[in-house]
Length: 602
Image 1 (cartoon, rainbow, N blue to C red):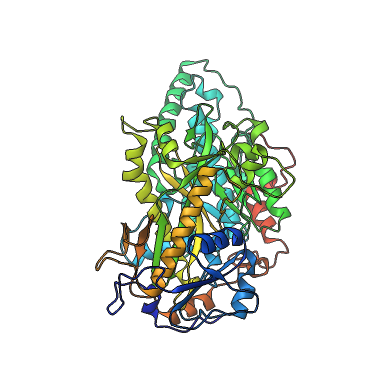
Image 2: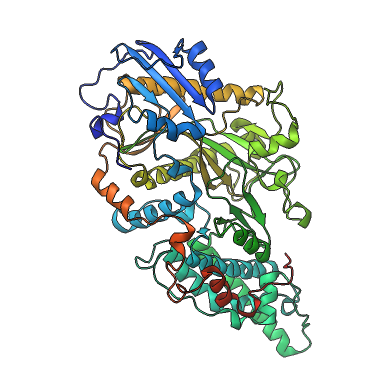
């Protein structure tokens, strides 16, 4: 669709950094009306009516166009498209809680491709930026045959790397997977590197949709190499002679060299990898823990993706997460992000994120692989075990054990993290973790500017960004969620935090609309600023010059549609005549093993 038209591009800032805007007015200087519908309507209604003394409009009433009236319209969840059709522009003096194409940030498929494109173009044309591999686990969109090929390569190389790690300290190294794993890495690691660069756009030539012919590597897998890939037993070979002893020493040296190489290759993301080779599969459009599965083996993952017509994004699983509590449970960070202008980008972050903690101890035991209470930290998932109920959700009287406030988390970690050197987690958070979270937020918003396009003033949208932490407190961005959990059924601490964040969000967007926020006269685009009138929402990104609307519209028009029909034969020279190009890719890669009739093991 066309971009919104209305006020000039610079006016979407709505802040006093621009000449002529008045300052110092209260958020309550004008009468406030509001209209709420969809997800979160109950919470917004209570805050706008009880805390901000607003008046709710009845069904047939429209926002007033009088100069002294302001109106906040909250449309949560699936009703946004219908609302946009009925009211495509924002009334003067009004604010609306969504951007028409803001879903590009919440779609796992769209965000993956946008982040790749943004990272490649920023590093290529606009100087240094945070490398994508430094905060986003390597991922593949299996809708495209070439991405399936790149994923299969990554899977095999990851398995071989995991075998090398397991074998590093073995005294009988010739009886382990090490020799076969080294052979796999020698042959496939360079190919995996080039394919990863191709699908991620780093080599300027290849992409998921460019013409290419997969190499036939499957016929070369020996029985020992296939055992590495499937987790089968290694062939016993004890050292019986002096030559065997020399060979064992050589293999140990090669293992050490391979482990150093893993650490030196940024795209291999050594901090993510363990000695297992686990992956996670996600539905590109679902949230709240739906459509997410953890896989230890290739065959069930392949069958799962095939059963979903390849409409799956796979992502490397973080095998060495930071664990909390005496029983060592997995956790992640829920970070609220408020966008008050997408082009130019004006982005705010809530300075008090909270932690979502798994209910059961972390484990790679076979029985726990499919246990969502071990591997998925979404509050929507964990509360089913903690507070099972068949009725409507009700607020809790006590705090949930699966939700931690940031202060409790930092106290629990203390100095117990990799490379702490006596440094407390609170210092590591302030100096390292928090700045890297902000870098990821900025990259995500900027990467989706082309999709969202131009828009009129008065729009805002709240997102929930999810991050995992590794053992060194490095944050790894997982996904962004539109219509994030507003925690109305949570315990008192999280409810109070959410209500404060939403109230201060409403006050901020209203003040921005009337131009009464005291923005600094000068600041760099990338920042972490406390702004008077913004409460605990810190300014994270503030661009002044918008991107060209015609350029963005042209880029959107040139992009392919992400659908199965658009990918058959796309980027697969020699496969276009195949009825099932994905199957053909698997056959060429796995050779005689493509049937995978035997159940694979960890």
